[in-house]
Image (cartoon, rainbow, N blue to C red; front, side):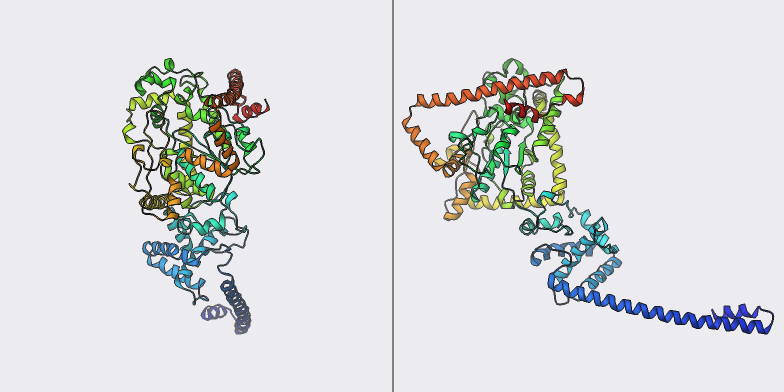
Length: 609
């Protein structure tokens, strides 16, 4: 630089001009040096202030825990989780990235040398998540995200470890700027995460559909409610069903008309769904869910189980029924609804829809829209374990709450494989059910992705199956289900119906009393469990019912039951008339928008009548 200035001044003509030029450059150099010194002094003061602020913030972190995090998590529970993430990045990153990661961790934990290494890794992991949240729209001051932080997030995301967050309705115990733990952490700190971000739901409605593993879910709900002293919306007069197959009415529930029950928590017995009537019984914040099964497999099961109904009685095989279904099927005959679109029937829709009907698509769209509106979650029987994990997350329950043994299951000797040709016949015969099933089979996996995540789902299903195996080894004498003739305890024998052989369980005799009580609840059949809950919830009514049963003649009992059934039949006929009129109007409307009659309108009109 000096040589350049000298060369410039030497180009001038006179010595005086050269001297003047040189002096000017010297003065400017001195001034610039002074300015540089002032700038350096200011920068030094700023650095000291920043260092003081960082040290003070570090001391605050020691007292308050991780910065900006208010999650009450256990460090020891998180240690192995974050260590796994560290090992993944450590093994797959380049040497430069490793150096950057160690440098970042050193900066973050310089004032925390007294803490263990696992806590340091935990801090780095949560801080990286926090920086990512800031970069995507947080209202807090933006911070610079280092490449290693982005790489860490990339590696974890690529493994499916950063699952979606829980629904807003379940995110409790967090402040507005609190980052929610990922689904990867949920697998390892499920109980802590549940307490911190989720409030278990206790207002639950389950539509129990036929031959869909719904009896097993009923047992899960019974055990959960009984262990927490919750109140069940049980059928009137100690019935096992809510007057199915009639459309449900609120006065079918014991305690509604007498107003002896202030609040119902769980409703889960068989009914034909009517949302407006259910809403009269259950609280506004009730969680509604149900379960579907592939109509092909379900039809094979129904044909065996309900072989005695008029539609099936004269046919020797399922194929023979399907080949002559319209000759053997009469919708006006009692119990024939089991033979045709039973899923649509249980959800409260007209099940008499033919595959070639012009309005089939409109009916299917109407049914699907109504189910999506009225239910928060639809499970799939073919993916029962996955359904239980999804239900666990939706209800904010624990893994122990959703574990179960299969109930009301058939023996393999009564199962008959179906040919592809038979399967196609069933799809055509139950075309409405088939369209409903296809739609919710798709949305089920959307729910898995949004609520749990695929990798998280695999881990929790594996944990659920391990827990099931442990319980089976501890509770069951033979390790699994046995035929009813082999069941030793009469109170544990399931109800037998039709041509199916319904299996049950024997308890392991070498278990202590407390374990026996727990295991017995897991294998108690539906009818016995319902009767026991009714007795616990309504002891006086149960005693009165037993006394009347002994004193009243069988003819009087049949007469009383016939009177009740006649009232239900009258209501059913009136409801069918309304449905026919509405569907007739639906066909005559030209606009597709006005043609889609919602299930809610039908229910409201029925309740008004």
